[in-house]
Image (cartoon, rainbow over all chains, first blue to last red; front, side):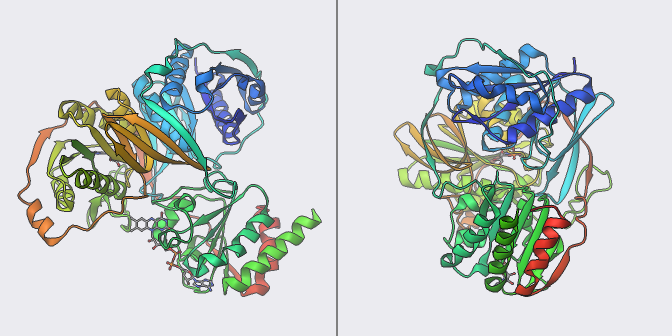
Length: 330
Length: 249
Ligand SMILES: Cc1cc2nc3c(=O)[nH]c(=O)nc-3n(C[C@H](O)[C@H](O)[C@H](O)COP(=O)(O)OP(=O)(O)OC[C@H]3O[C@@H](n4cnc5c(N)ncnc54)[C@H](O)[C@@H]3O)c2cc1C
Ligand SMILES: Nc1ncnc2c1ncn2[C@@H]1O[C@H](COP(=O)(O)O)[C@@H](O)[C@H]1O
């Protein structure tokens, strides 16, 4: 009755970390609605092998669809499978991750199912048998609570905001057979994937982000930030302000803010960043914010949990050194 | 070739937002409204294609209230040839907006339909791919750059960890992010010319909204920030706080 479907993401057959968050959110909503959570994993042949792991995060049942043509994300193929799975399961809610893939897929599914979607949700509750989703609007300057008058309710959740909770559940894996897939009729063709250089974590997915602004003075100084990122570990990524991207010091893929990516890592370093409203739009829901700026009146200090006033060329190496010491002691 | 660009009137990103008395919308008094920044990338892309081809037309389409005329004129001033205003009240239900736009788009017979990746108000990132799906057209989202060779579009789409290259045949839908298309400024001549360009008004044919804003609130206050100290000597204390107090390390 009150069942909820979590749409799981994989890349090259590996389930992505954010999907554990999606499954736990689905499980918590299902609990509120008096139902159970299911997960749906779509991929190439063999992808089902790791699927049962989603049981740890609250999936009572895991549906898997394997097909040659579905190994990589394809908007039209995936939208077909997800919408058919939603229809056949009679779900009350469907949860996506608000990742590049989830943001591309979820509106298509909403259109196919003819139901509305609340995107980039940062909080939710179940009230009087209905879902209330809370989402930032006006670049985080306000939060809207929205309710649905159609079923199922579709939500995409902002990565890193919700914990990936261990909620042990059945976790049985079952194939889901969609109606015939006809890749020949898909009008979009995926030509290639060009990985961005460095192979490091993407700023939108990392749980720690080290962002440099114009205060860094030039691209030649990014070694300082790379050292800090390396000290922080594999889950850390580099970010940049728009001033830095516009100057050509760093690629747009790293830009955080209104015309860049929205991030919500557990820990965010704003280094040599003034804290313009459009930058805050992309990072204000981060867990802990650290700022280093030589100007004590820089607006970034108003949102920073911890600030250091000083010259970043002196301060950053010391922070890196202290973190290295700490990690060495662990 | 006919290119339609869907644009939305949104508050300037610098604007301070004040909540309205109804508790579900913002107070528009004193707010400066602009063409949503991503939609400017889309207008710029359309103008560049037309200029490269040396022919074609660029039509703007927006759903909104009477005041949206002003927004459409701003886009016309950049160089678009004509505009259509669907009079209506776009709400938070992007599917309702997509239905209204696609109802009009179906009759426009455009080869290429461009959207912004997201509106700078509700930040939904939904309307473009929804409208495309409703019309059964291919749609590449979050595109930073594309090429048109004959009837085939090659799009570069920014995703986590890299870029996807997608090909599709016209007619097609693209949603634009920041990238190749830095919007031009309207010239004085452009602004004058825009006043005389055709702007057609119609009633929007949309569905009702099935996503309801229950309340709108200011963001939860972040606990007041704290300056730990000055200079590099503060680094050990910062790291200690991050570990012991914030539990972030
Ligand atoms: C429509 C629109 C969209 C936008 N989108 C974005 C966006 O997505 N992302 C974004 O970031 N911006 C965006 N902006 C731009 C934004 O308004 C700011 O211009 C930009 O964020 C400033 O970048 P910054 O903080 O790096 O540079 P600045 O504002 O120049 O700040 C540099 C800071 O470094 C400090 N500093 C200098 N030297 C040192 C030193 N040696 N040690 C310590 N501190 C030092 C200075 O005190 C200053 O505070 C947008 C603007 C508009 C109009
Ligand atoms: N009322 C509207 N009129 C015209 N285009 C719109 C409207 N709302 C949204 N759009 C288009 O859809 C894109 C995405 O908007 P959104 O899904 O609201 O983030 C915008 O950048 C516009 O191109």
